[in-house]
Length: 219
Image (cartoon, rainbow, N blue to C red; front, side, top):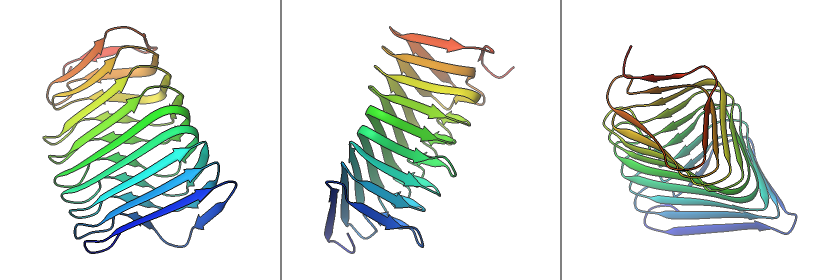
């Protein structure tokens, strides 16, 4: 989508889309919308950004494979909105950051219902923006930090099923953000609640394992 226009693409039935020499913008800017669906197919890319200035972008993965060699920005520009849903298959972002709602302001969401999400570090909400990471099923594995909330954001992580592993680095819940576990499993190395401002971990079902402890408040 570009300048008040919609754009959509479907990659399906064993197809392969390769965009490795430049970035992919879904919902570019100026009130545009964009949608990319990968269904039983593959998408190889460098950097992917959803929801440019005043625009909306959606990436839907249904039993497909999406592999990025760079970063994933969901709601990455001012007044932009982006969403990614994984319902089977794989989403791989292991060489760069995954950012949910880091524009000023913007809104970004990632929902994992089934399949495998592999990432390096994930940042949920910052700079007066909203970020939401939903784990409803499947398996999500982060090799580095999970930062929930920063810089006057509205940030939340909700785990209702499946598994989220952050066992090599920190989970930080800060700036009024919440991490709510009502099902499934959260496995972490260390969880810090309220490093600079308030942060909440709510366990209302499911399992939380912190192998090296939990810190409440800035100690």
